[in-house]
Length: 153
Length: 140
Image 1 (cartoon, chains in turn orange, yellow):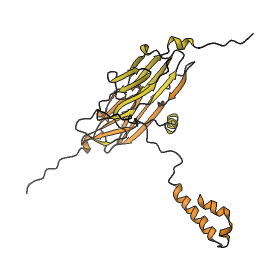
Image 2 (image 1 turned 180 degrees about the vertical axis):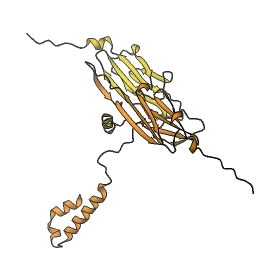
Image 3 (image 1 turned 60 degrees about the vertical axis):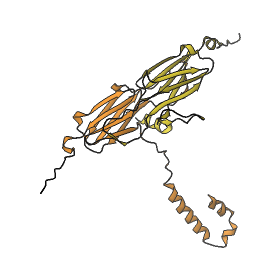
C-alpha cells in the first residue's frame, strides 16, 4: 500500500509524533474493512445448474447433465428438498493417449435444492432426454391453494 | 464427491456463451453456447468429445470445410406448458464451436455419434501422418 511506502521513508513524519500511529491505525482499519470482500476461495455457482418452472400445482426442475447414464442417477425428495446425485465415468486413459484439451467434468456430483412448497413424493416423475433431466414435482395435496368462495350477504 | 468439488473449483464447467463472430449476425433469436470439449490424441485417430445437452443426432451438424471442423447443435427449448420460469441458473441455446485441423486428418472418414447429449467424433489420421513416425534405433 501507498501508506507503507510513505512510512518507510520515515523522516517527514517523525516530528509529528503520533501521526504515524494514527496512519497505521487507519491502515489497519481499511485492511480489515476490505478483507471481507475478497474471499480466498473463488465463488462458483453450484453444479449442476438447475432451472425451476412453477405453477400452482406442480414444479418442474430441469438440469443439463449430458452423458450421465440414468442408472447412475439418484433423485430423492424429502419435504421441500429435492436432491439429485449422479456420476459420469472418468475418461479412460489408454496407452499412447494424450489430452490436448480436457474441459468436460467427470466424477460424482450432488445437489440439493429447496422448493417453494412440500412435494407429494409418491407422484414425482423424472424423464431424461438428450442429456437433460426433467423432474416433475406435484405439490402436496394438503398444500394446494384453495379457492375461497365469497358469500353474498 | 470431493473430487468433483475440486474439479469445479479449478475448472469452469458451466455453460458459456460463445463470442459473436466478426460482422456476422444471427437469423435465429437464440443464444449460442460453446460446448465444453475433450480432445484426445490417440495413435491412429483424434477423439473429440463435446457436451451438448438438449441436442440430438438429428439436430447436430458436423461440417469440415478446408481444414476447419465446425460442430453445430440446434436446441429446441422445452418450455413446460402452463408454467412460468421461476428460477434459472442456466440458459438454453444452440451450440457452436470450430476447430482448425492439421492436414493429418482424413476428412472423408470422420465418424460422429451422439448419446445422451454427448457428441463423439473420431477423426482418423491420414495414412501419410501415420507413416511419418520414424523409429530411431540405437546405434550399435
